[in-house]
Length: 414
Ligand SMILES: *[C@@H]1O[C@H](CO)[C@@H](O)[C@H](O)[C@H]1NC(C)=O
Ligand SMILES: *[C@@H]1O[C@H](CO)[C@@H](O)[C@H](O)[C@H]1NC(C)=O
Image (cartoon, rainbow, N blue to C red; front, side, top):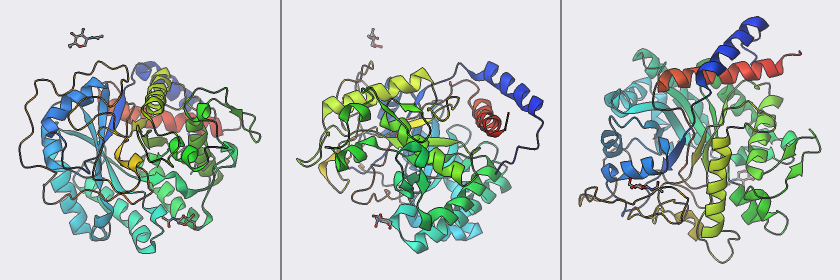
């Protein structure tokens, strides 16, 4: 923590200024590409869909070779996933190296893999063996990248369920679950050491669904007058920012104000069961449409007004084989035939003239089985706001540095 506090302030300010002059113009969208379905189009046909929503980054839950090959030379950035089922084997450094060679190095540089998400929502499974494998897996994957000289272009992280918070309201009271605090400290140390972001999956939808009588739908859909955090006095227009700042508060309480937080998943279902309040096309359109406006507006959150918010929307497709309530299968922006589920205001033409999928069906790549998403857990996809295509890697690096600098300055007693 406070790793940069030894830098002189004037140097920090200089860096901050030069960074902001060079990088203010870049902003765009990314999306989670989950594939728990047997009726999705071939990845080659998915490229225009990703482009049609203006996404410049895609997050996978595996390292599907068909996707990674299809998106070569498209300029689209990738977060690849290493499934929870592989964490124990990644304790073996040789296997970690082999995984990186096969699933990352083999596609670079044509396919722009920038991040490896090791495990998904691991800590909230409450499985002590799985949890204890998380950090060693992250470390060994990072070490493998270092040995292949890829650690400057590919970072290692993991995505957390917001359930890692014990207290999330008001945002200034945000605190991690006490039984997870020690593990999270070590993970945050890893982020400090390697410069990678802390990822959370944040769903105002689930908060609303659990408590529709108490929570204002307008507040979760970015349309209300908002609330004031009684602890900080800060005004929150929407629950999305409140959830993010609750995580910021939790990190800050442990002394990690300078780790960059990004939202690896958020979204809204267009359909749900009778007991799933709020799941409708109208609400999904409002949530995702307003979310994109907020992201395009490039304001940070109330606690972090200078944060360059990096958000991945969930999800590209409705995924018919996801278990759980109806909403789980209806988070997609697109139906499997490539038509939009609802009008998001993008110029979407569906699959158009792109060649039809081969008959093989499913992601039968043999080594990257679909991530299993547990019932009641968040859906497995997201949308992201990233840099312009040009100079993406320098931009990424600068963005991390900028985030670090801004938070360091904020932490200084000026
Ligand atoms: C995990 O434990 C927490 C805290 O004890 C509990 O609130 C949560 O429901 C549990 N989650 C699962 C998936 O069992
Ligand atoms: C949508 O895209 C089509 C094909 O690229 C183009 O002809 C049309 O003008 C676009 N419409 C809008 C509203 O941008």
